Amino acid sequence: MREPFIYKGTIPRIVFGVGTISQLSDELLNLGRRRALVLSTPFQEREAKELAERLGSLCVGVFSGAVMHTPVEVTLEALRVFSDRGADSVISFGGGSTIGLGKAIAYRNDTDQIVVATTYAGSEVTPILGQTESGIKTTVRDLSVLPETVIYDPELTYTLPTNMTVTSGLNAIAHAVEGLYAQDRNPVSSMMSIEGIAALYRALPAIVSDPENPAARSDALYGSWLCGVVLGTVGMALHHKMCHTLGGSFDLPHAETHAILLPHTVAYTEAAVPHLLEPIAALMGADRAAAGLFDFARSIDAPCKLQDLGVTGQDLDKATDIALQNPYWNPRPLEALAIREMLQMAWEGARPGTC
Ligand code: NAD
Image 1: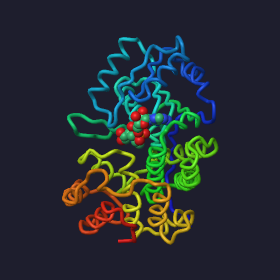
Image 2 (image 1 turned 90 degrees about the horizontal axis):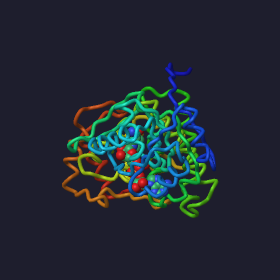
Image 3 (image 1 turned 45 degrees about the vertical axis):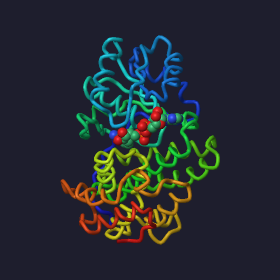
Image 4 (image 1 turned 90 degrees about the vertical axis):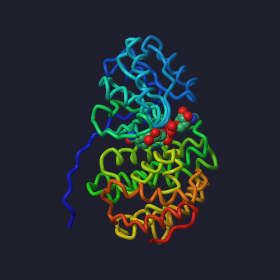
């Protein structure tokens, strides 16, 4: 018999496919907007300016100051530019950092957002905004930050370096993995999780061998969309909480932290719910999902040791304490000793068994 569930969908309009960037002006006009401010990181400024040129009179400028973790001072600076130029919308061109800035602007002035997604982080389809003030990262979940439209053009991901492709893809897989055992999971979110993981499992090795493989880039972006929707619609648990708290406390890079911790947090949780993670084990031909994820990550040269991110052996006790602060739900309750052992394995880059 099926377990009872509630299904509630909140997905932006999705425009997917090779060449869909050419539909950007029409998408803006569909929203009734004609004065967009294009956002990017400094690294993608050149492409953002090219996009602005193509938009012509529909664009009032480019703000290229987006950085990781959405610091409030950057948001306030962007809001000044938004208002000085008389903008009526934002176009976020990039990954989670740029999308975070667009969301932070929308949170404050409810502007319309179009996202042109160029990584696999998935933020573009979630109503979640993480922002940092005085070094403290807080998260809000509010429908006002959910973008109106997302354009996924696989050609724009060809330039994403292979190492970032791998870690960003594993970041996406992490959303779907936690979706499989989420308390509020439902048949649609679980279906999306499995389909999203399978697409990325096919795509990432092919991209590592050929970064401009059109079919693989397309599959990866499709998979990341599905995984992002899972993140936006059901609750996350131990893995996301650990990445969030450790990332903030030790200033760790977002996608790499996800990539390293995933097999270990899964090993921890799988002990309680092996049946819910069985589809991943089956997909990866492993006896357990954790082992399958670890071997997969190694096969695509993902980083695998916390120590390589600058975390020291002495930091692990503090990291355990941080992970246990403000307790939260996980299918397997949080036990200090087992969490400490799990972090040790992740620090050493050891292949996980189940704790
Ligand atoms: P990112 O946006 O920081 O991008 C990393 C770097 O890659 C940047 O310099 C960027 O300009 C560059 N880049 C992006 N796409 C490129 C491409 N196609 N070609 C070449 N360079 C490219 O990285 P990210 O992992 O996408 O985002 C991380 C941030 O997103 C974190 O702050 C994280 O907390 C946040 N995030 C939020 C959510 C959410 O739902 N709120 C979800 C996932 C991630």
